[in-house]
Length: 380
Image 1 (cartoon, rainbow, N blue to C red):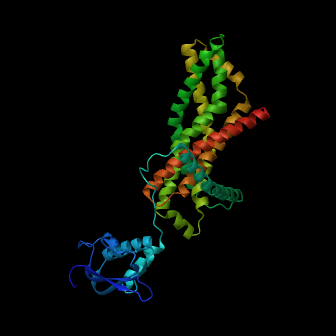
Image 2 (image 1 turned 180 degrees about the vertical axis):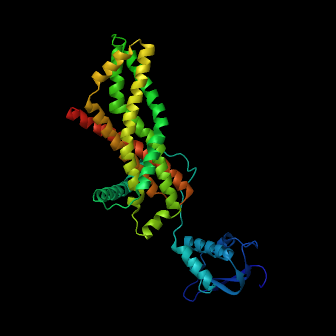
Image 3 (image 1 turned 90 degrees about the vertical axis):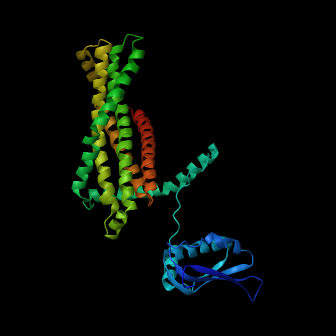
């Protein structure tokens, strides 16, 4: 057995019962490039007559990871059948490597092509996911709140340069897409309002509809959704990649708070920039309404301008800016949460980015509903 890899079996009956120990003798050179036997070839030998397996490696000449793969496969098969394994006669290095492999749990990815699920099964899975994720969300919210309190006390640790870089990324660089979407939404609101107002000859009130709608509600909502898809997913992907590369673990090892250093600048940037983008979105929407009113419905520019000023009050801007601030915080919370929860694989990064967008839009919708009801009850 001094040449290629070889193995032999010997079943020795036990003294206490009819079942015995299966000895597996390993000899020769067990190298991964030599066409080693598969562990599956032994599974048919693991019947009811075997209660224990013991490896004998006295004639083993040379080995590498091929031996470890073979032994580990046999160990998994024995674990499924409740058979004990004795590897005390394997080389000491192989024993240590096998012990390390057993100490780390197997990382299981989500199953692909699992087949369609019924409606009740999907609802059940979603409910379980929510119940498992709610404590983590509350814990992360608590950590972010403590970080904000440290910021107010002047004890938060992050670089001002990172904050300005995030502000540039989420603010000025988002202007083109916000401009396009806001202009198109303003056009839609103007046409939608004109279709109804022309029935009573009150097309001039297109200015009221577009101005109040964009400044108070639609501008903040559309900006929030745009930023959720553009920036929230980016935050999740960035932090998720840092999880995969173990950079966040390095911060913790150095005693640096990942919440202060990574999450806080992103949250501050969105809370500062989304309200300004909301205000900008409102003005772009009003310009779109002006264009439609002047070119399609023969309303004068001065008339539209005067009606817009009459319709808008400071409270409309206050409501829009407050909603923009809350939406920005929700987007940053969702993106950073999913990024920090990301697994250790490339596939997990994609899941984190997708989940961040879905979570952010859900939180924005819930916040919008609650704030609208509260402002209505307060008469704002």
